Length: 159
Image 1 (cartoon, one colour):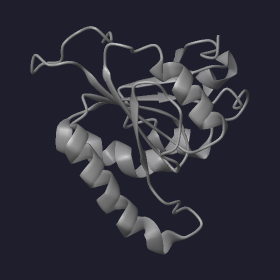
Image 2: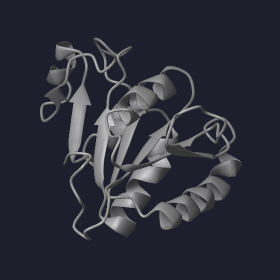
Image 3: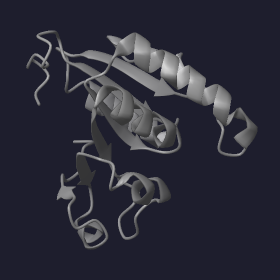
Image 4: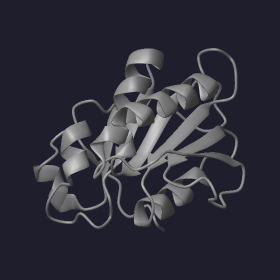
């Protein structure tokens, strides 16, 4: 699926990037630049992110405050229905735990997970959780292929 390729409905591809803040967000921003022709949006903990041409939506953190989970689910549902994505890409952390299953069930989205470049020997918790759900699972360290046999080694995405 390339960025200029129309989706099955003959419209511009709609790609969502789902991640937490920090390094995950930095990697998502780098990836988002590789799809300039797509309708791009971000679901993260911040909406004041400067990513040119990317609509940003903020959700509250819920990992350490699980009582926020229902509210986050509703916010993510609202975003997904507004954006109607063809694919979701995550570079890690908790927002993907809610967004990925919802997008797959409701829209049949293609799900792409990029294991963090910080994970060089052991898989992340979120990677282990979402591995079987993803249509494409990319690792940036060849050592992780032993943990994710169906994954593809992508090298460093930060290049």
